[in-house]
Amino acid sequence: MRVTIMKTHNYSTRSVILLLAVSLFFSAFVAGQAVGADPRPPHAIAQPAKAPARLSIRRNPNLGFNVIVRLWIDGQPAASIGYGHTYEGFLAPGHHVLAVLASPSPRWSTPWQLPLDVRSGQTYGFTAVTDGSGNLILDGRFGFPPRVQ
Image (cartoon, rainbow, N blue to C red; front, top):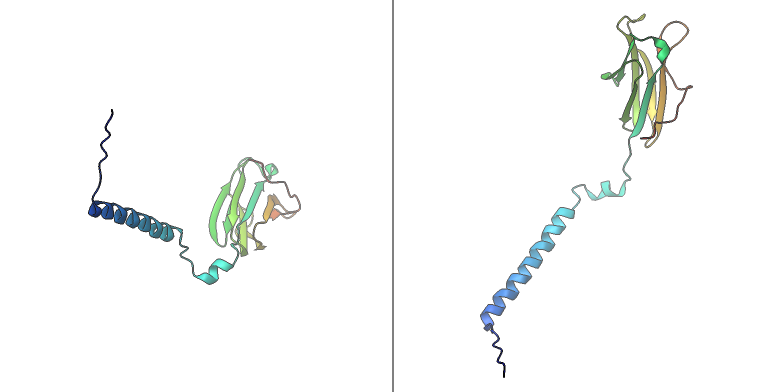
């Protein structure tokens, strides 16, 4: 004959275990609510997020090996595009001004400017080329597909 002895807990021990389980559950629930809370005000949640637009500027190899294309976006230096390189970046939706200047010896000392109204999620592709008078410009007629990465 086999005798099994079971350990029994008194009422106060069971109450403490139950209280501990309930408090752990409640703490986990409250922590999950705080982590998942969105800090934005309710009116901002209803508006769709505006995705940035892609900007790609290819440098025409016909500009010459020593010519560097200096790019400014909204008056701020953005890139120096050397021979065989392409600028890839993003723009927030809205109005922007792109400017380019050939370096080191520009024919004209003032950068050529292109106002651009950017739409959310669009891709804008330009080629840095010279126009007939020797100005460095951004030409969108020579559009090119974005590189697949």
